[in-house]
Length: 539
Image (cartoon, rainbow, N blue to C red; front, side):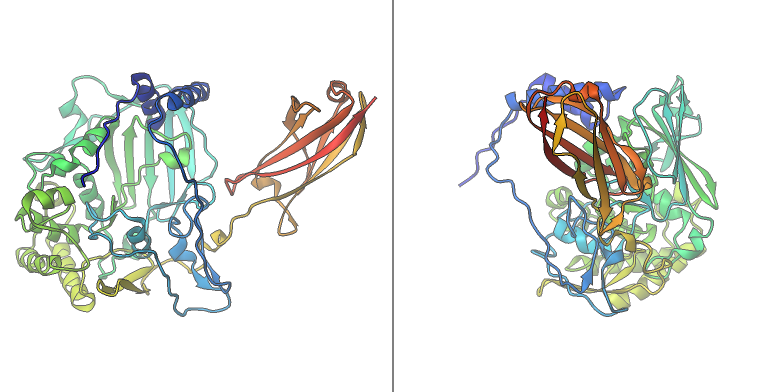
């Protein structure tokens, strides 16, 4: 029986409010707060679902295993789990990971599976330029060396970490030579000067700096050094598939690209060695760390080099495979998989063809950044990789996909011996530093007298460093649970804080039982800690 689909018609005001919140289309934190208040009221009026279950899942693992778990997404949702998983008292060895499901849909970086059960193992092979802090959600530099963020004056953006330099500017003008769009017919970027007749401004300018040695230390799993061509390929593919003149046009991606173009203002490569990329945009996050555009070659559904994508490009261009499920259905061809099934034979055929031709896709543009010698070496390396591993999932991360077993529903990964980073680089994220808080003070307070309460903030028995504390705040409630006072506790030393209630506060109390609560926020973990105690006020 076919399920009945109920069309949703949200209230126009609710739709407008939620879109503003999604896109940070606001000028101040006060405006954001007001939008949230409206959204909460309108959401109740617009409610179309009744939630029956709110559940927490768990990820069991052995006591002798250490691994990062994201506070929101668990182990499977942690980008850092492949870097930290290890046996506590052992170097090397093997780890078996069981998952609820595996190999649900085809793997390809442009339009493949987005199931978390597939994304989790993909993260073992791939790597990001910046990674999400599993305890705060802020981006941390992995391949990036540093970044700069210039924000339009007045916008509510702040920074926490030192790897980003945050400044403000009254007007951010997009330079004439910035790439702002793509001409798929002529296979070249369109500059701001070519597209616009008036000066264009942006809300932010992001500048990302890669290390000087990146092109010599970071290699793809087939042995090819990462190159500028991998970055430029990603810039091209940000636009190309949504253009009707493209050889791999896919109407399914048009809405996403249109949405991107609604806020994207331009990109420039300021330096090629070391690589420095400047991006202009109207969309931003309130955390500066999360507003950096890195252009690292990690696509929506996985990491990929320009040469593996070139092979896949040929397969779709010739209508034998398709990146997206929608286009595969439309063409009645195989939904492309880089790791298993009939796709592999097709991809191997086009690898041989690309190698024979010295094929460089989008040659009018990419040809300026990829030499014939690099193309020949890349295809030779990919052919050797395919002979060794039997698939095309070539990434740069800490593990190489060694074996794919669709029938058994399993995957095997082996250590990438060419990976340049030390095994303990992210070890500090094996466990969240959630503070333990205790509160001590007088059980009886005379109305109108001063009262002092001591706050202890520790982690595993040791004082919690003040440099890692965001705030220690107290709240005082009277016998009727009315909030009568609040404010910051005073730092005494690492792990020790003091709350002094003056006569102006205790004088508001009436005889009876009262409560003081303390909330502690950390800069290194997003979960706050609390403590409270009751005290009696007497005349």
